[in-house]
Image (cartoon, rainbow, N blue to C red; front, side, top):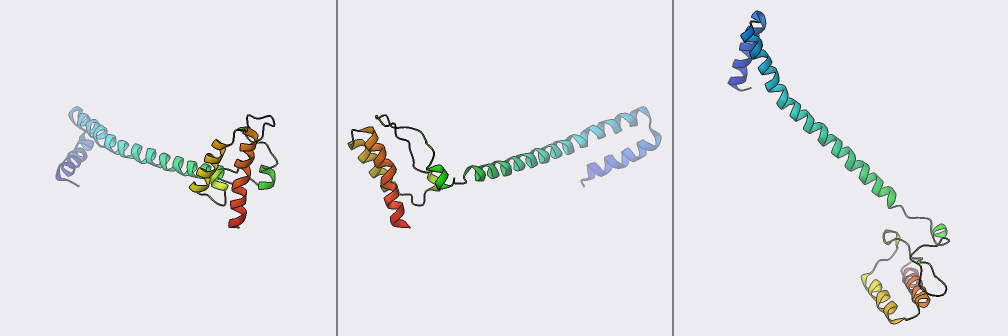
Length: 139
């Protein structure tokens, strides 16, 4: 502790025994002086603790969101966006984090070939089927 704090504490101890009006003012001033900094420190620590708890909750929620669906259930359902063609075909590729094989070259090839195919349904069939051949080759 610094000398100023020790001197002030000694003065407060003397004041507490006498409790004159001047001493009461000094006691009140000291009570407001130190607890404010202590209060600010405690408030900071509590808010830091709350932030850490929220970060932990967000990371747990992200892990829950990143669970991959069962392929049998996922591929039995329809997913948008649908093709603009006559058959209105569904997008059947799994989410990126659930794919067994990710390749920027494969994605570039898919987007290039889709641009070359004028029929939207045939384009969607290629988009859904081409990655499956790569995935089967990797396994």
